[in-house]
Length: 166
Image (cartoon, rainbow, N blue to C red; front, side):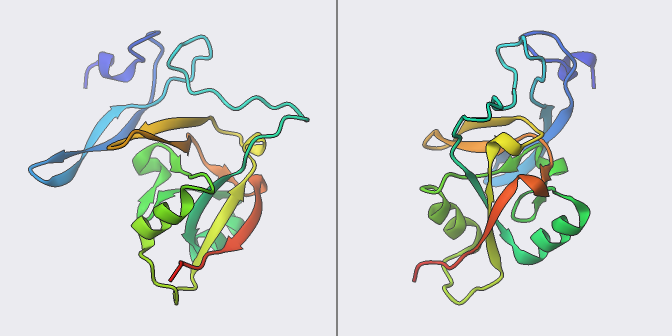
């Protein structure tokens, strides 16, 4: 690849390449694309949430399998983006708000009320080491929180059991 594919189109700073996906002939195929810009002076920068001790940031949530969370606790960080995809493959970890969680869970894991292997990680954005950005996702353009780096287990302030409605 040429050098242009590895720079931010706005500021020209070097960026990492991340795996994305696009739909071709009805199937999703992987594509490499420039990752987020980390230059704080750039308009396209993905910057961390401000860390003010008295600021109240709403928690962000991530649904996952209990076994993956237990393994992450032993390693000290969680590095899965979404079901079956790693942080390294996608470039960020998918999160949701409390209101978005039921739809996300149904989409990823179905609505089986008997399933007992899922947990919801409740994360305090002020405790993150990596940048957090709310980004619009197709087709409706609804904004979802994405964390552009590993999730330290210390940022998880609660772990809730997930039970699908049904």
